[in-house]
Length: 164
Image (cartoon, rainbow, N blue to C red; front, top):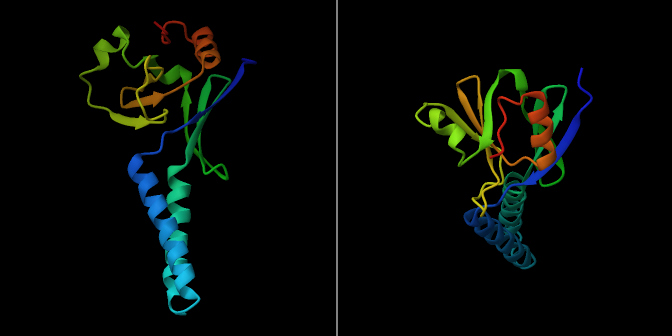
């Protein structure tokens, strides 16, 4: 049994549309809240827009937490720093390859029809620090792991993990 434990927290980028919708809903909530003082039925509209702003904030303010322990990668989604949900658990033994997104090691995998799941930062930076993991031939998972996590995975599966 491996004693290696690595934890990595990654903040996902919010889309500009989500930021815009959140600001509009907050402004509408304040507007209907002020109108409510004069016109009582505006309270319903203020309540609806307030709940909408809360839900948009909850589902767009995301962080992903990667945990590596005992040959397993566990991915949790943290919503608005208040609610945690386990998304997936991946076994390193069943992983085919883990390499940077633009790596030449992934050339043999490019023409596959696979489901893509994005648990990365959600944007392309220079240099691109995202990694692609092919899992059991049917999934392509995008991650943004730390250097420590890559080292731990490389120690366990040196022929499957590349860091070009």
